[in-house]
Length: 124
Image (cartoon, rainbow, N blue to C red; front, side):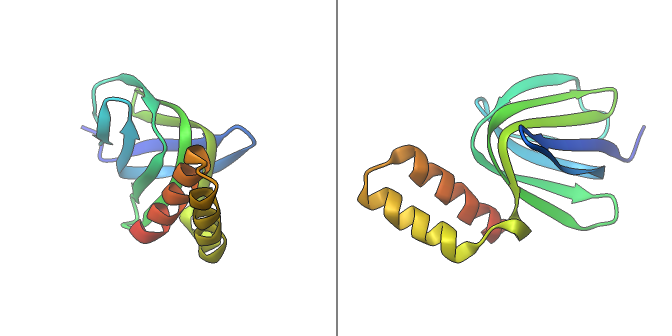
């Protein structure tokens, strides 16, 4: 049995992260899912939320993902996101301002995006 799986995290505008991992946790419309090497093939719809990737070197990569699809087959996991940002790329102060602004304007979609960014930073 394989001890690693190949992961590709791709946003509509760029490749966000690619590498070998031992575990990936993501939120789907059916709930949170953990994918490890040898997982059954799957195809699902990603919900907005943090994605956590445990790398084969023992590190952790966290990204804020906003919608998309997840697919696993032949020990290859693809996360095809509408928008994805690595937690290290997120400006916390900007995300906090965006959250406050969205709350004051009653913009639920913007509030959800800002909240996901802040949760991704908190997980890392």
